[in-house]
Amino acid sequence: MAGRTWAPPGPYDLGRTLCVLARGPGDPAYRVTGDGAIWRASRTPQGPGTLRITAAGGEVRAEAWGPGEDWLLENLPTLLGATDDPSAFTPRHRLIHEAHRRNPGLRLARTGLVLESLIPSILEQKVTSDEAYRAWRLLLQRHGEPAPGPAPRMHVMPDPRAWSLIPSWEWHRAGVDDKRAATIVRAARVASRLEEAAAMDDARASARLQAVPGIGPWTTAETLQRTNGSADAVTVGDLHLPKIVGYALTGTRGTTDEAMLHLLTPYEGQRHRACRLILLSGVTPPRRAPRFSVRDFTRM
Image 1 (cartoon, rainbow, N blue to C red):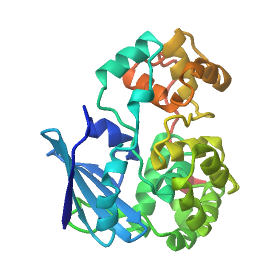
Image 2: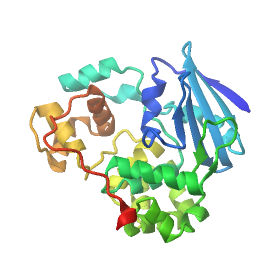
Image 3: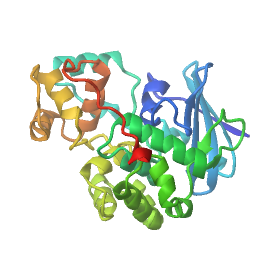
Image 4: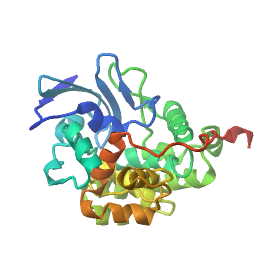
C-alpha cells in the first residue's frame, strides 16, 4: 500500500465530485463503504490498481494498491478536480444560482482513462439505466479480475484484448445487443489511440472518439465529462436531460435538444457544469408514464 494527501484550495465535496463515476449501485469498480470511504478499481497504463479515498479536516487522503498504485496516486489531484476551475462559472438563472450556492464543493472529476468511461457509456446507448448497469456488472465480474488490495468485492475491468475476445453468447447473457458489443470490440482494438484523447481539447477528443463507428455525440459527451473533466460537453440525444433542463429553466415540458442548447447558450464553455447544477437542484418534470421495463435478452 502507498498513500498520498491532497488539500483542496477551498470548499470540497468528495462524494458529489466522484459520484458520476459510479455506474449504478452495484458497480464492481466503485464502492462507498459504511465509513464514508470511496473505493475505485481502475486499469491504469501501469496495470490494475485500487484506490481508497476519504475526506476529513479539509484534506483528502488516498491509499492505493496494485501495479497501478503509483499512477493512481500521481494523478489523484486531477481525478479529484484540481484542474477544474469553478470560478469560470457565472450563474444566470435563479435556480442555477441557488444550486451553485448550495454546492460550493462540487468539482468536475477527470480520470484520464478513456476506455474506463467509454465502454460503460456504449453499454448505456438506447437502453434503460438498469439494463446498462446490469451489463457492466456482469461483464466485469465474469471477464475482469479481482481488484488488488483489500477492495470490498471489487473488479478491475478487462484489458482491451480481453474485451475483444468476449464471445457472442457472453454479450447476449449480459443483455448486450450485437450493435453495442461490436462497437466496444472496435473501440478495444484501437484502445491506445483512443486513450490519447484524454490529453486533447474537446474538439479533437470528440473527433478521435467518433472516428470509431457506433460512437456518436451522446457517447462522446458522456465519456469526455468523466475522462477529460470537460465543463462544456453537453449530452445531446438523451431521453431525459433536455426535458429536465427545459422544465427547470422555463417550467415547460417536452424541451428538445435544440431548445436545450439555446437555453444553455449563456453558459457557453460551462454548459456541462450548468447541467450538473440543474440535476443537483432536484427539479424535474412530473412523471406521466411508468418506467420502461427491463428487457430480458436471454429470452430473445
